[in-house]
Image 1 (cartoon, helix red, strand yellow):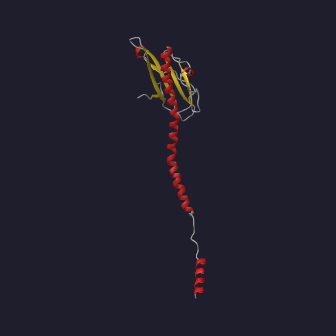
Image 2: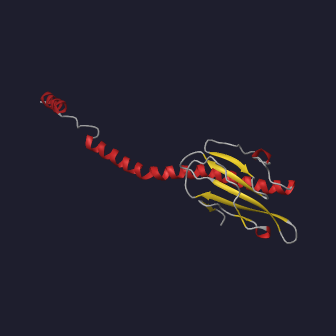
Image 3: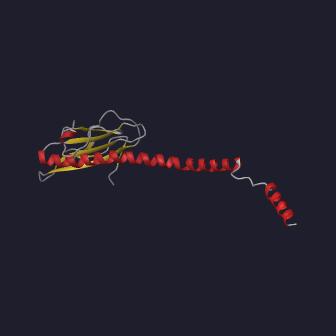
Length: 180
């Protein structure tokens, strides 16, 4: 009897089907759908953050150019005519911005960060020299961001307003002040 029982037990084990393993096609499609939806939600935010990081370069460099121009003016009595004259190491061009000095206005200079990519904004820093009522020379600066993104190929002169002791830097049209 024991042999007969062993044989039936072995037959039972051999006949027993193994359960199917793995995922069904529907389950895989649902996972792919959920992942696609999550990617569609996250991707615009990621692209936006990358653009902000690239624009941070332009802001930092133009702000540095403004400060360097103020220092250059107090040391030399005039604004630096070229970016290479400033006491900072700033490249004239990177992959995303081109930097130029525009000193076509007397007693003022424009420091330009011109976007080289169509989805980035450009920056303009203006520094002006004002002689106050005590005949002291004071340098004032403004910092502006273009209202729209786009490639810019022409540097802007410094944006100014007023004359004499009321001479002051400002932002040109289509630019907004970042100085709060």
